[in-house]
Length: 138
Length: 117
Image 1: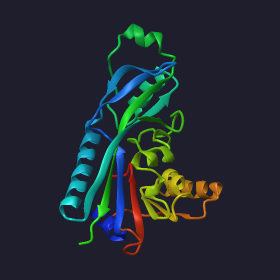
Image 2: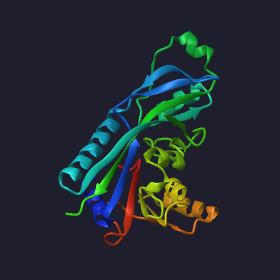
Image 3: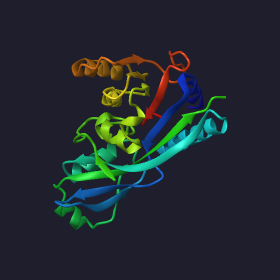
Image 4: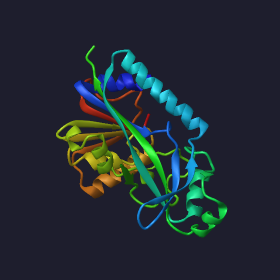
């Protein structure tokens, strides 16, 4: 990754910017039922161990590029993004098949509640982080 | 603030961590979160790991020109097809790796790693 960042530094014009955006695995994602107004939290969805490791490696690569004087940090932030599903079964299938998250949510509502609303729309709400870095002329 | 994905997930993006277009925010929404179109307005933009070109095409109307690069040949083929369909004339896609960029030094004002690192 550091090698790729060196290439980014090379192809950027002086004062150019690098935008790094990716899912924020430092905070949990949530399984939520879409209500007429707003959302109801049904469960917490953690990031898989493998993806946590990948994300930390990316963080280290950026930190090293900054430490080596290739870039300076200008601004960073986080926003939330919702991935929609037609039912609870679809959401569960998504969690089972995707590598980013652990396969099962940690439910915060009881089974009766999950059954009652199983056929209503659900979302996975997850955090996305971004950072804007400026190319430094060495 | 929360923003929604482009549409229901369906079968798209199976067996990949999170990078499928359908699972990601709309380009305009993502750009707005980063600071708005001014970030790329009139700029030479490189979208590294562009996949099917979702983001590159999304910012093309603001940028002077956009290059999309991705090692996935199928993704680049889809991106080229989408660019033709959209009539985007200032976007170019090619297969390649971030570790060896086929561009001269100082060729871009903005490099975007959107869900790539």
